[in-house]
Image (tube, rainbow, N blue to C red; front, top):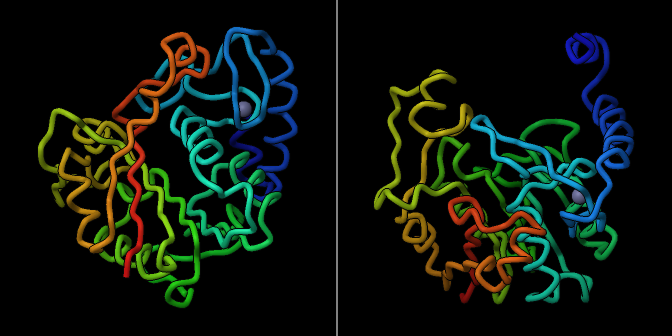
Length: 254
Ligand SMILES: [Zn+2]
């Protein structure tokens, strides 16, 4: 009921501010030592369940990071220079704490979203306003399953990368499928949930996802970074759901 009232009377950007404040109290309530969130650098007794089909210990109670965001933060911090140089960074559908950290580290960081108030500016990933070869890094996590023209979006990501620049892309993948499943007749939330596993997905990627990215002519790598963690650490950071945590890297070479 409170959520419905807020949604009706309070603008989205103010609702987000209220949510962050409430999350701070919630984070305090869940403080503990069993789980650790690298995004907000706090330890908790548990993470929260999350998803249309609930996953246990998925969401940080304070910063709302999910498994894939925590893994990406580890990867960016440990395996790239993104936090050590003033890199030009484009971040789609920005995850709150990851966005804050990147913005603190680079004056050339910009976040974008199709929806107003969720990022620095509104952009359509299928038709970006940025010039060719603008960015050193592009971060695009759980977006490509939601856009109507995926090939346009992939081409746009590559177009705005500098030569030598890298894009990090994550999506939900059904590892039992060779080919991506997409049926234009699936249009209701309930059917998307039934066939794709989430009610706002437009397709369910299969193992061919890497080939879809290869249309760019860049060097494409599939990185199972969670495998570099011990079993104890995977539990502590709540990582290891491969279908949501593969990192696909595209490096622009020409
Ligand atoms: Zn957190």
